[in-house]
Image (cartoon, rainbow, N blue to C red; front, top):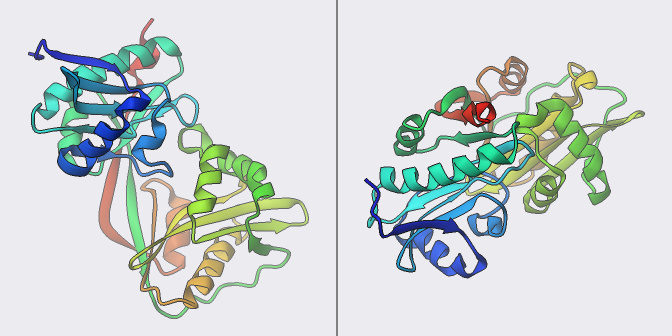
Length: 289
């Protein structure tokens, strides 16, 4: 039973310090891997805190981005409240608001920690698919077929609207990166390249750095240009860039049921690590009145 002293309310700017301390010092936490820090979502809809007489004990944020997909960006709680108690209070409030805000909304989450999976399963979330991790260690570059008419160049700010359109066409609404997300991604990347031909932009890649090398965070090719070596050209160009630095590993994630992506990465020398991250959705909000 929920402690009657505990109250759920919307997060406000004045909560910033307590939220930061909660995640820094004492929270059991779930964080979605995206281009924003947890505090960057303050001020967006569906950002809630659980408090006891002014002290924040838990936080849940699931703003919609892209539209109609509310990813669970953060959930965390202090030892003063149990995970099930904190989740139940915050989720029921968030679910009610999301359910009545639109008929098309889904809530989704990528599971990194098993304890969080137990919580969402108890609330009716359903498995959608798995994300698998692949990596490539430093070695000779693979022999790539020559591609004619494809040019690879650095991504410029003015490319972003076209890149956003490519992303939506390639991934669909559920996995889509919005223009604002891609703007942030470009500024945080160690490599941001586009592929073009005489028709215009046909693909892009964004990669981030880490202590062991780099992570290919996004690779997308316009559907009508797929199967023509564009993805391989972008990955090959990235490997050449990394070859000029002291990297030891390049990693990438993709959906377990994305046969085309898996075939491309395996052709480029990537192997599965055995790690995977389940993706769960809560579609019941679409069925409520």
